[in-house]
Length: 129
Image (cartoon, rainbow, N blue to C red; front, side):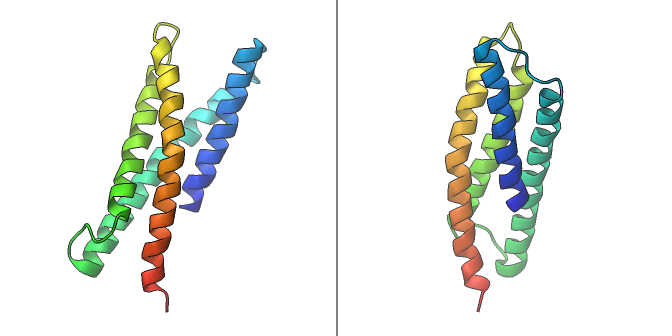
């Protein structure tokens, strides 16, 4: 989860640099966007990996899912990350709505990540002595 949160923060910083350059009508360093994209793809992979680990671990421990709010929080994060990636792939001069959608989804994702982090902490406390 730490890598996912780190990727989200780094994506926010890089995205902020892109937005700042756009607003100031100044060129953004050439390396920013090519770095933003693979980190975003990495975040998608990390979130899907965490989903798989959570499902396998919960099924292995309890034999079924849905024992806490963490499942709903996790599925929300997965959905938002996938929606963010999809909206990012739509960004172009012809689709001005995609950038706004991407930024809005990422704002909601911030709250969802906070929720899944909290609910995950609660779940982990059950396993600590």
